[in-house]
Length: 422
Ligand code: LLP
Image 1 (cartoon, rainbow, N blue to C red):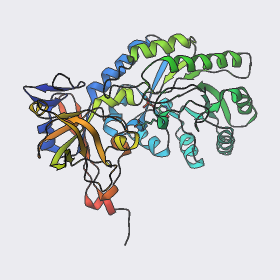
Image 2: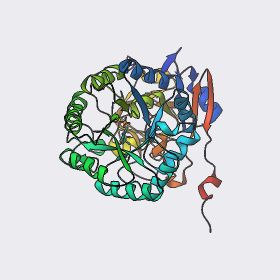
Image 3: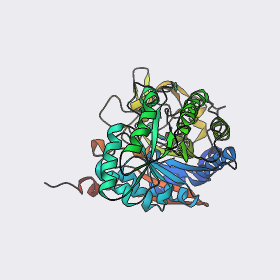
Image 4: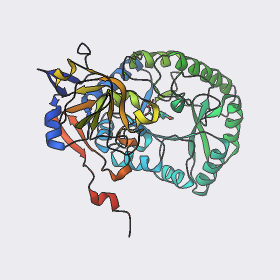
């Protein structure tokens, strides 16, 4: 256990755990626990890796902000000229508030409401990614009633097995996402017929946390066949091809392809220099750039089993409970890894047996009062948190330019009841 090294920007300095230059102790002392901490530098270097793989190719990176919608973090991406992929009116609001320009916003999702469509049109977002004929009909009505034209891209369901957790696989026919690839040509015909719509793009998203390139290659080839078929039709001029997100990260021993190789592959498989290649990375940009810091409240033994009871719980980070996801646990004091405890659980205070952050694992020999970092918590961490058990959601800190800045305050008891009445 002691031979392993944490994922950057986590590192040990003289036996104490640091994240992007700040010790866990100082972060916890200044901001309390549980605490999410993000590294702007780590996000920027991932972004640079995408751009290196893309090279001179015309492109737009539209960060899938569902992974982490914190305003401070979005601000970093806005300053890097990133766009965003949104899936709700709320995400549109956040994106605009963070200074993301509307012409860099794409609106995905299977269930946009008429109100959300109006919001997108009002703000003149770049395009709507449509996922069904029914959605096209509604968008057509909404746009033409306002005398506007909605630019649309069709999300194709390429029927490709991405080989990931069933909850986050989206490219199979049995999933609710996208339009069956056999119905795609008819869908573009429908777009031409309906008022208030203009076909601009085509795309796919086959799933999340993919750790090899095969699924992406296969999906890109299917899309390429469709682009070729559509080229025959003079009424359809596509300017965008959207390759979705889904590139995985290291949580444990995975070895996902680099963003450079991934981006290079898609540029090669979709050789249309006149089209803008849209990338929608979520997890890969921010996942390894964030941690959740928690303090151990108690150490408890039931028979041979050791439980470490932490002040963070499933309401703060639901991925282990929901997907059986693995997050590395790194103690603030490196010494604690010398005599690890096997078959131990790291659990939270929530009243559910499903409330665990690590189950049946070899864990450090933690003591009450210790701090731990749950690694790779920058994506689908805070955004999936809740107030279950009337727990206050954690604060969020962003490290940028040698400064650790609070970008979301810890909730207060008043926040819990602010919208309620007796
Ligand atoms: N584009 C679309 C249309 C998507 O549906 C998603 C994610 C993405 C992009 C970004 O995917 P990423 O690059 O992050 O893999 N809560 C789950 C992940 C759900 C992903 C949903 N869609 C988790 O914690 O693993």
